[in-house]
Length: 190
Image (cartoon, rainbow, N blue to C red; front, side, top):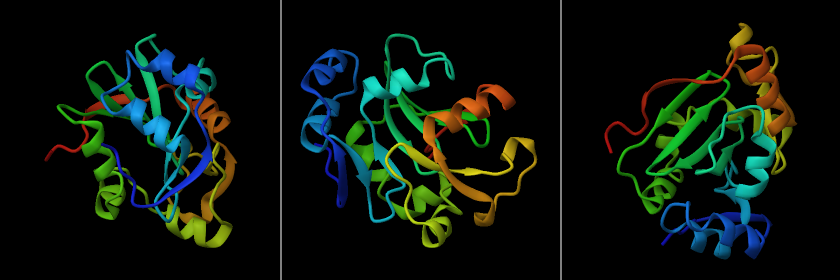
C-alpha cells in the first residue's frame, strides 16, 4: 500500500474519475487516490500526486496520450510521471527526455520518490530546493520554469527559475523544443 511520510493535500479526486481510471491504472493507484487525493509529497513538495483526468485534459495537445496512459505525478520543475500499461514514463520536459521503468510497483515508485538521493539523481531535483528557499513553494498546478528555457541555452541555475503555470510551461516547451525523446531506463539499478 502506498504510504507517504509527509503529504500536503490539495483536493480530493472525484469518485467518478477514480472509477473511470481504475481499469487502466497500476495496482495501488485507486487506493492512493482515495486515501490521499491530489497533493504534494514531502517537506519540499517536489513530487505532486495529480488528478489523472485533469492531467489528461491539460496535457492534451502537448504530448500524445493514448487512451490507456494515466498521468499520475508531476514535479516542481514541470516533469510528469505517467503509467502506460506496464511501465512508468518520466517526461522531463526541461531536458527534452523520456525515461521508462521496468518491473516497478507503485509502492516501490512512491518509496523512491521520497528518497532525497533518488530525487536529486534520478529526478534531477536541483536547483529546486534553492528556488523554494528564495521564492516559496509553487502551488499545485505551478512549477518552476527556467527562463530562458534550458532547451534554448538557458543555464541550470536557481536564479533562472520562475514560478509559472505547470501545464502552460509544458506546452511552451513542447512547442519550442519538441516532444521529449526516449533516452533509456529510469532507476537502472532497480
